[in-house]
Image (cartoon, rainbow, N blue to C red; front, side, top):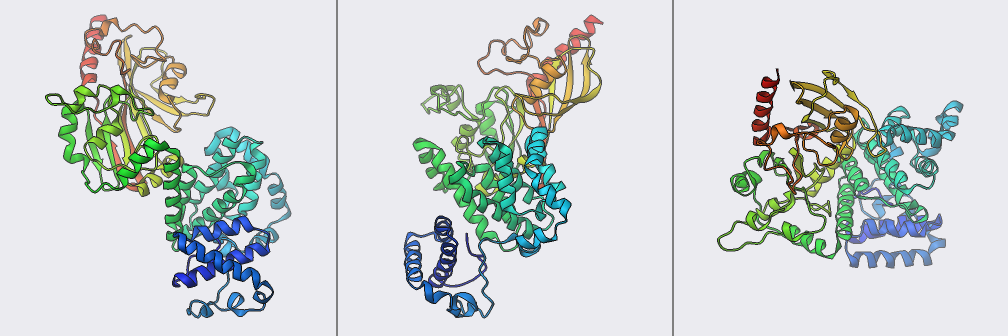
Length: 521
Protein backbone atom coordinates (compact mmCIF):
# COMPACT_ATOMS: atom_id res chain seq x y z
CA UNK A 1 0.00 0.00 0.00
CA UNK A 2 2.99 2.25 0.45
CA UNK A 3 4.22 2.20 -3.15
CA UNK A 4 2.78 3.60 -6.36
CA UNK A 5 2.66 0.30 -8.23
CA UNK A 6 3.89 2.17 -11.31
CA UNK A 7 7.28 0.46 -11.61
CA UNK A 8 8.22 -2.63 -13.62
CA UNK A 9 11.03 -4.23 -11.65
CA UNK A 10 11.74 -7.90 -11.10
CA UNK A 11 10.63 -9.68 -7.94
CA UNK A 12 13.77 -9.00 -5.88
CA UNK A 13 13.94 -5.33 -6.84
CA UNK A 14 10.23 -4.92 -6.18
CA UNK A 15 10.70 -6.28 -2.66
CA UNK A 16 13.60 -3.86 -2.06
CA UNK A 17 11.35 -0.94 -3.08
CA UNK A 18 8.51 -2.18 -0.91
CA UNK A 19 10.87 -2.58 2.04
CA UNK A 20 12.07 0.99 1.51
CA UNK A 21 8.51 2.23 1.95
CA UNK A 22 8.16 0.08 5.03
CA UNK A 23 11.42 1.42 6.47
CA UNK A 24 10.40 5.03 5.94
CA UNK A 25 7.08 4.31 7.64
CA UNK A 26 8.91 2.86 10.65
CA UNK A 27 10.82 6.11 10.88
CA UNK A 28 7.39 7.73 11.29
CA UNK A 29 6.37 5.27 14.01
CA UNK A 30 3.98 3.36 11.74
CA UNK A 31 5.21 -0.23 12.16
CA UNK A 32 1.77 -1.83 11.80
CA UNK A 33 0.87 0.17 8.71
CA UNK A 34 4.28 -0.55 7.22
CA UNK A 35 3.81 -4.27 7.53
CA UNK A 36 0.37 -4.05 5.93
CA UNK A 37 1.97 -2.02 3.14
CA UNK A 38 4.47 -4.76 2.45
CA UNK A 39 1.77 -7.40 2.68
CA UNK A 40 -0.49 -5.67 0.17
CA UNK A 41 2.10 -6.06 -2.61
CA UNK A 42 3.39 -9.50 -1.59
CA UNK A 43 1.15 -12.23 -2.82
CA UNK A 44 3.40 -15.15 -2.10
CA UNK A 45 4.67 -16.24 1.27
CA UNK A 46 8.22 -16.59 0.00
CA UNK A 47 8.25 -13.01 -1.22
CA UNK A 48 6.91 -11.80 2.12
CA UNK A 49 9.78 -13.54 3.89
CA UNK A 50 12.20 -11.81 1.53
CA UNK A 51 10.62 -8.46 2.36
CA UNK A 52 11.10 -9.09 6.06
CA UNK A 53 14.72 -9.98 5.38
CA UNK A 54 15.33 -6.72 3.55
CA UNK A 55 13.50 -4.87 6.31
CA UNK A 56 15.84 -6.27 8.97
CA UNK A 57 18.85 -5.28 6.91
CA UNK A 58 17.52 -1.75 6.56
CA UNK A 59 16.85 -1.47 10.28
CA UNK A 60 20.41 -2.50 11.08
CA UNK A 61 21.74 -0.03 8.53
CA UNK A 62 19.47 2.86 9.52
CA UNK A 63 22.28 5.44 10.05
CA UNK A 64 23.58 4.72 6.54
CA UNK A 65 20.23 4.84 4.73
CA UNK A 66 19.72 8.57 5.17
CA UNK A 67 22.87 9.28 3.15
CA UNK A 68 22.48 6.47 0.61
CA UNK A 69 21.34 7.63 -2.87
CA UNK A 70 19.79 4.26 -3.61
CA UNK A 71 16.89 5.20 -1.32
CA UNK A 72 16.71 8.93 -1.81
CA UNK A 73 17.50 10.02 -5.35
CA UNK A 74 17.34 7.82 -8.42
CA UNK A 75 15.17 4.85 -9.15
CA UNK A 76 17.56 3.75 -11.88
CA UNK A 77 19.94 2.53 -9.15
CA UNK A 78 17.29 -0.06 -8.25
CA UNK A 79 15.25 -0.70 -11.38
CA UNK A 80 17.37 0.72 -14.15
CA UNK A 81 14.53 2.88 -15.46
CA UNK A 82 16.42 6.16 -15.16
CA UNK A 83 13.38 7.98 -13.75
CA UNK A 84 13.20 9.88 -10.47
CA UNK A 85 12.18 7.76 -7.52
CA UNK A 86 10.03 9.72 -5.13
CA UNK A 87 8.18 7.40 -2.75
CA UNK A 88 5.10 8.68 -0.96
CA UNK A 89 3.15 7.29 1.95
CA UNK A 90 -0.02 6.51 0.01
CA UNK A 91 -1.01 6.32 -3.63
CA UNK A 92 -1.45 10.09 -3.33
CA UNK A 93 -4.61 11.39 -4.88
CA UNK A 94 -3.11 14.80 -4.13
CA UNK A 95 -0.83 14.46 -7.16
CA UNK A 96 -3.14 16.73 -9.16
CA UNK A 97 -4.38 19.03 -6.43
CA UNK A 98 -1.24 19.45 -4.33
CA UNK A 99 -0.24 17.89 -1.02
CA UNK A 100 -2.34 18.20 2.10
CA UNK A 101 -0.53 21.27 3.44
CA UNK A 102 -0.96 23.04 0.10
CA UNK A 103 -4.69 22.38 0.18
CA UNK A 104 -5.00 23.76 3.67
CA UNK A 105 -2.94 26.86 2.79
CA UNK A 106 -5.04 27.55 -0.29
CA UNK A 107 -8.31 27.52 1.63
CA UNK A 108 -9.80 30.77 2.72
CA UNK A 109 -10.56 31.43 6.37
CA UNK A 110 -14.25 30.72 5.76
CA UNK A 111 -13.40 27.33 4.24
CA UNK A 112 -11.20 26.45 7.21
CA UNK A 113 -14.12 27.39 9.45
CA UNK A 114 -16.33 25.08 7.36
CA UNK A 115 -13.82 22.27 7.96
CA UNK A 116 -14.19 22.76 11.70
CA UNK A 117 -17.94 22.39 11.24
CA UNK A 118 -17.53 19.32 9.02
CA UNK A 119 -18.64 16.78 11.67
CA UNK A 120 -21.87 18.76 12.18
CA UNK A 121 -22.47 18.94 8.43
CA UNK A 122 -21.88 15.21 8.09
CA UNK A 123 -24.26 14.42 10.94
CA UNK A 124 -26.97 16.68 9.48
CA UNK A 125 -26.56 15.21 6.00
CA UNK A 126 -26.83 11.65 7.29
CA UNK A 127 -29.85 12.40 9.43
CA UNK A 128 -31.66 13.96 6.46
CA UNK A 129 -30.96 11.30 3.87
CA UNK A 130 -28.51 8.71 5.21
CA UNK A 131 -26.06 7.67 2.45
CA UNK A 132 -27.93 9.76 -0.13
CA UNK A 133 -27.40 12.79 2.08
CA UNK A 134 -23.66 12.09 2.32
CA UNK A 135 -23.37 11.68 -1.46
CA UNK A 136 -25.03 15.06 -1.88
CA UNK A 137 -22.66 16.59 0.67
CA UNK A 138 -19.71 15.12 -1.25
CA UNK A 139 -20.84 17.05 -4.34
CA UNK A 140 -21.28 20.25 -2.35
CA UNK A 141 -17.84 20.21 -0.66
CA UNK A 142 -16.51 19.15 -3.31
CA UNK A 143 -14.97 15.85 -2.22
CA UNK A 144 -11.77 16.12 -4.30
CA UNK A 145 -10.69 19.21 -2.33
CA UNK A 146 -10.85 17.39 1.00
CA UNK A 147 -8.07 15.57 2.87
CA UNK A 148 -8.89 11.86 3.48
CA UNK A 149 -7.57 11.92 7.06
CA UNK A 150 -9.82 14.88 7.86
CA UNK A 151 -12.86 13.21 6.29
CA UNK A 152 -12.38 9.99 8.25
CA UNK A 153 -11.74 11.85 11.50
CA UNK A 154 -14.83 14.03 11.02
CA UNK A 155 -16.91 10.96 10.14
CA UNK A 156 -15.94 9.16 13.33
CA UNK A 157 -16.84 12.21 15.41
CA UNK A 158 -20.13 12.70 13.55
CA UNK A 159 -21.20 9.07 14.06
CA UNK A 160 -21.00 9.46 17.85
CA UNK A 161 -19.84 5.91 18.46
CA UNK A 162 -22.41 4.31 16.13
CA UNK A 163 -20.19 1.86 14.23
CA UNK A 164 -22.76 0.97 11.56
CA UNK A 165 -23.38 4.63 10.83
CA UNK A 166 -19.64 5.33 10.61
CA UNK A 167 -19.13 2.53 8.06
CA UNK A 168 -22.12 3.73 6.00
CA UNK A 169 -20.73 7.27 5.85
CA UNK A 170 -17.23 6.07 4.95
CA UNK A 171 -18.76 3.90 2.22
CA UNK A 172 -20.50 7.00 0.89
CA UNK A 173 -17.21 8.93 0.68
CA UNK A 174 -15.59 6.08 -1.25
CA UNK A 175 -18.68 5.72 -3.45
CA UNK A 176 -18.58 9.43 -4.23
CA UNK A 177 -15.08 8.91 -5.68
CA UNK A 178 -16.73 7.00 -8.55
CA UNK A 179 -18.61 10.18 -9.42
CA UNK A 180 -15.48 12.38 -9.55
CA UNK A 181 -15.10 13.68 -13.11
CA UNK A 182 -11.38 12.89 -13.35
CA UNK A 183 -11.15 9.04 -13.11
CA UNK A 184 -7.52 9.03 -11.95
CA UNK A 185 -8.19 11.62 -9.27
CA UNK A 186 -11.23 9.70 -8.06
CA UNK A 187 -9.25 6.43 -8.01
CA UNK A 188 -6.44 7.98 -5.99
CA UNK A 189 -8.83 9.53 -3.51
CA UNK A 190 -10.68 6.19 -3.09
CA UNK A 191 -7.38 4.44 -2.40
CA UNK A 192 -6.37 7.07 0.16
CA UNK A 193 -9.75 6.85 1.91
CA UNK A 194 -9.57 3.06 2.07
CA UNK A 195 -6.01 3.29 3.42
CA UNK A 196 -7.02 5.68 6.19
CA UNK A 197 -10.07 3.52 6.92
CA UNK A 198 -7.73 0.54 7.38
CA UNK A 199 -5.42 2.59 9.62
CA UNK A 200 -8.21 3.47 12.08
CA UNK A 201 -9.98 0.09 11.95
CA UNK A 202 -8.25 -1.47 14.94
CA UNK A 203 -8.52 1.61 17.14
CA UNK A 204 -12.17 2.40 16.28
CA UNK A 205 -13.32 -1.22 15.90
CA UNK A 206 -14.86 -0.50 12.49
CA UNK A 207 -13.85 -2.47 9.41
CA UNK A 208 -14.41 -2.27 5.66
CA UNK A 209 -17.24 -4.53 4.50
CA UNK A 210 -18.08 -5.99 1.09
CA UNK A 211 -19.82 -2.76 0.06
CA UNK A 212 -16.71 -0.77 1.00
CA UNK A 213 -14.44 -2.99 -1.06
CA UNK A 214 -16.84 -3.11 -4.02
CA UNK A 215 -17.04 0.67 -4.15
CA UNK A 216 -13.24 1.01 -3.83
CA UNK A 217 -12.74 -1.58 -6.58
CA UNK A 218 -15.11 0.23 -8.94
CA UNK A 219 -13.38 3.57 -8.32
CA UNK A 220 -9.90 2.08 -8.79
CA UNK A 221 -10.97 0.28 -11.93
CA UNK A 222 -11.69 3.67 -13.52
CA UNK A 223 -8.16 4.96 -12.94
CA UNK A 224 -5.46 4.83 -15.60
CA UNK A 225 -2.71 3.34 -13.43
CA UNK A 226 -4.63 1.62 -10.65
CA UNK A 227 -5.67 -1.69 -12.20
CA UNK A 228 -3.28 -3.68 -10.00
CA UNK A 229 -4.65 -1.98 -6.91
CA UNK A 230 -8.20 -2.73 -8.07
CA UNK A 231 -7.38 -6.43 -8.41
CA UNK A 232 -5.87 -6.45 -4.91
CA UNK A 233 -9.07 -4.95 -3.50
CA UNK A 234 -11.27 -7.45 -5.37
CA UNK A 235 -9.13 -10.32 -4.09
CA UNK A 236 -9.55 -8.94 -0.59
CA UNK A 237 -13.34 -8.86 -1.07
CA UNK A 238 -13.31 -12.50 -2.19
CA UNK A 239 -11.36 -13.51 0.92
CA UNK A 240 -13.78 -11.60 3.15
CA UNK A 241 -16.75 -13.32 1.50
CA UNK A 242 -15.12 -16.69 2.08
CA UNK A 243 -14.49 -15.84 5.72
CA UNK A 244 -18.09 -14.73 6.31
CA UNK A 245 -19.62 -17.72 4.58
CA UNK A 246 -19.00 -20.40 7.20
CA UNK A 247 -17.49 -23.83 6.59
CA UNK A 248 -20.27 -25.28 4.41
CA UNK A 249 -20.59 -22.13 2.36
CA UNK A 250 -16.81 -21.96 1.93
CA UNK A 251 -16.78 -25.44 0.44
CA UNK A 252 -19.51 -24.41 -2.00
CA UNK A 253 -17.65 -21.24 -2.97
CA UNK A 254 -14.40 -23.10 -3.45
CA UNK A 255 -16.11 -25.68 -5.66
CA UNK A 256 -17.76 -22.97 -7.76
CA UNK A 257 -14.44 -21.26 -8.38
CA UNK A 258 -13.07 -24.53 -9.74
CA UNK A 259 -16.08 -25.04 -12.00
CA UNK A 260 -15.08 -25.48 -15.63
CA UNK A 261 -18.49 -26.10 -17.24
CA UNK A 262 -20.19 -22.81 -18.16
CA UNK A 263 -23.84 -22.77 -19.25
CA UNK A 264 -25.81 -19.74 -20.42
CA UNK A 265 -29.16 -19.32 -18.68
CA UNK A 266 -30.83 -18.70 -22.05
CA UNK A 267 -29.75 -22.15 -23.23
CA UNK A 268 -31.60 -23.82 -20.35
CA UNK A 269 -34.61 -21.47 -20.26
CA UNK A 270 -37.03 -24.16 -21.49
CA UNK A 271 -35.75 -26.59 -18.86
CA UNK A 272 -36.21 -23.97 -16.14
CA UNK A 273 -39.74 -23.22 -17.35
CA UNK A 274 -40.64 -26.89 -17.34
CA UNK A 275 -39.48 -27.15 -13.74
CA UNK A 276 -40.64 -23.84 -12.27
CA UNK A 277 -43.39 -22.54 -14.54
CA UNK A 278 -43.75 -20.46 -17.69
CA UNK A 279 -43.25 -17.19 -15.76
CA UNK A 280 -39.55 -18.04 -15.39
CA UNK A 281 -38.00 -16.08 -18.28
CA UNK A 282 -34.49 -14.94 -19.24
CA UNK A 283 -34.80 -11.28 -20.24
CA UNK A 284 -31.17 -10.25 -20.92
CA UNK A 285 -27.83 -12.03 -20.59
CA UNK A 286 -24.11 -11.46 -21.19
CA UNK A 287 -20.97 -13.20 -19.98
CA UNK A 288 -21.07 -11.01 -16.85
CA UNK A 289 -24.73 -10.87 -15.77
CA UNK A 290 -28.19 -12.29 -16.32
CA UNK A 291 -31.53 -10.46 -15.93
CA UNK A 292 -34.53 -12.72 -15.48
CA UNK A 293 -38.17 -12.80 -14.46
CA UNK A 294 -38.45 -14.45 -11.05
CA UNK A 295 -41.79 -16.22 -10.52
CA UNK A 296 -43.94 -15.20 -7.56
CA UNK A 297 -43.53 -17.62 -4.66
CA UNK A 298 -39.84 -18.38 -5.33
CA UNK A 299 -37.41 -17.15 -2.69
CA UNK A 300 -34.13 -15.62 -3.90
CA UNK A 301 -31.97 -17.72 -1.57
CA UNK A 302 -32.17 -19.85 1.56
CA UNK A 303 -30.09 -18.43 4.38
CA UNK A 304 -30.31 -21.83 6.03
CA UNK A 305 -30.81 -24.77 3.71
CA UNK A 306 -34.14 -26.43 4.45
CA UNK A 307 -35.22 -29.96 3.59
CA UNK A 308 -37.93 -28.54 1.33
CA UNK A 309 -35.32 -26.48 -0.50
CA UNK A 310 -32.96 -29.32 -1.33
CA UNK A 311 -32.83 -30.76 -4.83
CA UNK A 312 -33.15 -34.54 -4.66
CA UNK A 313 -32.86 -36.37 -7.94
CA UNK A 314 -34.81 -39.63 -7.90
CA UNK A 315 -35.91 -41.89 -10.69
CA UNK A 316 -39.31 -41.09 -12.09
CA UNK A 317 -39.52 -37.69 -10.41
CA UNK A 318 -38.34 -34.26 -11.50
CA UNK A 319 -36.16 -32.14 -9.18
CA UNK A 320 -39.07 -29.74 -8.76
CA UNK A 321 -41.28 -32.50 -7.34
CA UNK A 322 -38.62 -33.22 -4.72
CA UNK A 323 -37.77 -29.58 -3.96
CA UNK A 324 -41.04 -27.82 -3.24
CA UNK A 325 -39.28 -24.69 -1.98
CA UNK A 326 -36.39 -24.28 -4.40
CA UNK A 327 -34.55 -20.95 -4.34
CA UNK A 328 -33.65 -18.90 -7.39
CA UNK A 329 -29.96 -19.34 -6.55
CA UNK A 330 -30.19 -23.14 -6.40
CA UNK A 331 -32.40 -23.36 -9.49
CA UNK A 332 -29.70 -21.65 -11.59
CA UNK A 333 -26.75 -23.46 -9.99
CA UNK A 334 -28.50 -26.79 -10.57
CA UNK A 335 -28.41 -26.02 -14.30
CA UNK A 336 -24.67 -25.11 -14.12
CA UNK A 337 -25.26 -21.40 -14.69
CA UNK A 338 -22.20 -19.61 -13.22
CA UNK A 339 -22.89 -17.05 -10.49
CA UNK A 340 -20.55 -14.67 -8.67
CA UNK A 341 -19.23 -15.59 -5.24
CA UNK A 342 -18.96 -12.20 -3.50
CA UNK A 343 -22.33 -12.47 -1.74
CA UNK A 344 -21.68 -15.17 0.85
CA UNK A 345 -25.41 -15.57 1.55
CA UNK A 346 -26.72 -15.88 -2.00
CA UNK A 347 -24.52 -16.52 -5.03
CA UNK A 348 -24.89 -13.87 -7.75
CA UNK A 349 -27.42 -11.79 -5.80
CA UNK A 350 -26.74 -8.07 -6.08
CA UNK A 351 -30.24 -7.13 -4.87
CA UNK A 352 -33.36 -9.02 -3.85
CA UNK A 353 -37.09 -8.99 -4.35
CA UNK A 354 -39.53 -10.57 -1.91
CA UNK A 355 -40.66 -14.17 -2.22
CA UNK A 356 -44.19 -13.13 -3.17
CA UNK A 357 -43.03 -10.51 -5.70
CA UNK A 358 -42.49 -11.51 -9.31
CA UNK A 359 -40.46 -9.74 -11.98
CA UNK A 360 -37.05 -8.34 -12.93
CA UNK A 361 -33.96 -9.25 -10.97
CA UNK A 362 -30.31 -9.06 -12.07
CA UNK A 363 -27.70 -11.59 -10.96
CA UNK A 364 -23.95 -11.23 -11.47
CA UNK A 365 -22.07 -14.09 -13.11
CA UNK A 366 -18.58 -12.76 -12.25
CA UNK A 367 -17.12 -11.18 -9.12
CA UNK A 368 -15.94 -8.19 -11.16
CA UNK A 369 -19.47 -7.41 -12.35
CA UNK A 370 -20.92 -8.13 -8.92
CA UNK A 371 -18.77 -5.38 -7.37
CA UNK A 372 -19.63 -2.92 -10.14
CA UNK A 373 -23.37 -3.61 -10.04
CA UNK A 374 -23.39 -3.33 -6.25
CA UNK A 375 -21.80 0.11 -6.66
CA UNK A 376 -24.57 1.17 -9.06
CA UNK A 377 -27.26 0.21 -6.56
CA UNK A 378 -25.42 2.05 -3.77
CA UNK A 379 -25.15 5.20 -5.89
CA UNK A 380 -28.87 5.06 -6.79
CA UNK A 381 -28.12 4.87 -10.52
CA UNK A 382 -30.56 1.98 -10.97
CA UNK A 383 -34.09 2.63 -12.20
CA UNK A 384 -36.76 0.21 -10.96
CA UNK A 385 -40.51 0.26 -11.52
CA UNK A 386 -43.29 -1.99 -10.28
CA UNK A 387 -46.91 -2.78 -11.02
CA UNK A 388 -49.30 -3.51 -8.18
CA UNK A 389 -52.92 -4.51 -7.85
CA UNK A 390 -54.21 -2.75 -4.74
CA UNK A 391 -57.48 -2.54 -2.86
CA UNK A 392 -59.60 0.27 -4.31
CA UNK A 393 -59.70 3.64 -2.65
CA UNK A 394 -61.37 6.40 -4.66
CA UNK A 395 -59.36 8.99 -2.72
CA UNK A 396 -56.14 7.89 -4.46
CA UNK A 397 -55.14 10.63 -6.93
CA UNK A 398 -54.17 9.72 -10.46
CA UNK A 399 -50.48 10.23 -9.67
CA UNK A 400 -48.22 11.57 -6.93
CA UNK A 401 -45.34 10.98 -4.51
CA UNK A 402 -45.14 9.02 -1.27
CA UNK A 403 -42.45 10.06 1.18
CA UNK A 404 -42.87 8.25 4.47
CA UNK A 405 -40.10 6.43 6.37
CA UNK A 406 -39.84 2.66 6.11
CA UNK A 407 -38.47 0.95 9.23
CA UNK A 408 -37.42 4.38 10.43
CA UNK A 409 -35.37 5.22 7.33
CA UNK A 410 -36.13 7.83 4.64
CA UNK A 411 -37.96 6.38 1.63
CA UNK A 412 -39.45 7.89 -1.51
CA UNK A 413 -41.69 6.46 -4.26
CA UNK A 414 -43.81 7.84 -7.09
CA UNK A 415 -47.07 6.29 -8.30
CA UNK A 416 -49.49 6.52 -11.19
CA UNK A 417 -52.92 4.90 -11.56
CA UNK A 418 -53.04 2.86 -14.77
CA UNK A 419 -56.56 1.45 -14.46
CA UNK A 420 -59.40 1.47 -11.93
CA UNK A 421 -61.82 -1.43 -11.48
CA UNK A 422 -64.75 0.43 -9.94
CA UNK A 423 -64.61 0.10 -6.15
CA UNK A 424 -62.88 -3.27 -6.23
CA UNK A 425 -59.23 -2.58 -7.05
CA UNK A 426 -56.78 -0.38 -8.95
CA UNK A 427 -53.72 -1.13 -11.03
CA UNK A 428 -50.76 1.12 -10.10
CA UNK A 429 -47.35 1.78 -11.61
CA UNK A 430 -44.78 2.59 -8.90
CA UNK A 431 -41.18 3.80 -9.19
CA UNK A 432 -38.81 3.71 -6.22
CA UNK A 433 -36.06 6.26 -5.53
CA UNK A 434 -34.71 4.44 -2.47
CA UNK A 435 -34.31 0.74 -1.80
CA UNK A 436 -35.85 -0.03 1.57
CA UNK A 437 -37.11 -3.46 2.52
CA UNK A 438 -40.86 -3.80 1.74
CA UNK A 439 -40.86 -0.18 0.53
CA UNK A 440 -43.57 -0.56 -2.14
CA UNK A 441 -45.75 -2.67 0.13
CA UNK A 442 -45.52 -0.16 3.00
CA UNK A 443 -46.08 2.86 0.78
CA UNK A 444 -49.19 1.30 -0.74
CA UNK A 445 -50.66 0.20 2.59
CA UNK A 446 -49.67 3.12 4.82
CA UNK A 447 -48.97 5.92 2.35
CA UNK A 448 -51.96 5.41 0.04
CA UNK A 449 -54.25 3.41 2.31
CA UNK A 450 -54.53 0.82 -0.45
CA UNK A 451 -52.68 -2.40 0.46
CA UNK A 452 -51.58 -4.82 -2.25
CA UNK A 453 -54.04 -7.63 -2.91
CA UNK A 454 -53.21 -10.84 -1.02
CA UNK A 455 -50.28 -9.22 0.85
CA UNK A 456 -49.96 -11.47 3.93
CA UNK A 457 -48.36 -8.76 6.11
CA UNK A 458 -49.86 -5.39 5.19
CA UNK A 459 -53.30 -6.16 3.70
CA UNK A 460 -55.13 -6.60 7.02
CA UNK A 461 -58.73 -7.90 6.75
CA UNK A 462 -58.97 -7.66 2.98
CA UNK A 463 -62.13 -8.92 1.27
CA UNK A 464 -61.21 -10.87 -1.86
CA UNK A 465 -64.24 -13.15 -1.93
CA UNK A 466 -65.21 -11.80 -5.36
CA UNK A 467 -61.89 -13.18 -6.67
CA UNK A 468 -62.24 -16.56 -5.00
CA UNK A 469 -62.30 -18.63 -8.18
CA UNK A 470 -59.40 -16.71 -9.74
CA UNK A 471 -57.11 -16.89 -6.72
CA UNK A 472 -58.23 -20.19 -5.21
CA UNK A 473 -54.78 -21.75 -5.61
CA UNK A 474 -53.14 -18.75 -3.89
CA UNK A 475 -55.24 -18.74 -0.72
CA UNK A 476 -53.39 -20.09 2.35
CA UNK A 477 -50.37 -20.74 0.17
CA UNK A 478 -47.07 -21.22 2.02
CA UNK A 479 -45.34 -19.44 -0.84
CA UNK A 480 -47.00 -16.13 0.13
CA UNK A 481 -47.78 -15.00 -3.42
CA UNK A 482 -49.36 -11.60 -3.87
CA UNK A 483 -49.92 -9.03 -6.63
CA UNK A 484 -46.69 -7.04 -6.83
CA UNK A 485 -44.59 -7.27 -9.99
CA UNK A 486 -41.15 -5.74 -10.71
CA UNK A 487 -42.01 -4.68 -14.26
CA UNK A 488 -38.76 -3.03 -15.38
CA UNK A 489 -35.10 -2.64 -14.46
CA UNK A 490 -32.55 -0.28 -16.03
CA UNK A 491 -28.84 0.18 -15.27
CA UNK A 492 -27.64 2.50 -18.07
CA UNK A 493 -23.96 2.27 -17.07
CA UNK A 494 -23.84 -1.37 -18.21
CA UNK A 495 -26.50 -1.39 -20.91
CA UNK A 496 -29.12 -3.17 -18.81
CA UNK A 497 -32.67 -2.43 -19.96
CA UNK A 498 -35.24 -5.12 -19.23
CA UNK A 499 -39.02 -5.27 -19.04
CA UNK A 500 -40.87 -8.22 -17.58
CA UNK A 501 -44.34 -9.14 -18.84
CA UNK A 502 -47.03 -9.59 -16.20
CA UNK A 503 -47.40 -13.13 -14.82
CA UNK A 504 -49.97 -15.44 -16.37
CA UNK A 505 -52.09 -15.39 -13.19
CA UNK A 506 -52.52 -11.61 -13.47
CA UNK A 507 -54.36 -11.92 -16.78
CA UNK A 508 -56.96 -14.18 -15.18
CA UNK A 509 -57.40 -11.94 -12.12
CA UNK A 510 -57.63 -8.69 -14.13
CA UNK A 511 -60.24 -10.29 -16.39
CA UNK A 512 -62.23 -11.24 -13.28
CA UNK A 513 -61.90 -7.71 -11.88
CA UNK A 514 -63.22 -6.19 -15.11
CA UNK A 515 -66.14 -8.62 -15.08
CA UNK A 516 -67.06 -7.81 -11.46
CA UNK A 517 -66.62 -4.05 -12.06
CA UNK A 518 -69.00 -4.24 -15.03
CA UNK A 519 -71.63 -5.98 -12.89
CA UNK A 520 -71.32 -3.34 -10.16
CA UNK A 521 -71.74 -0.49 -12.61
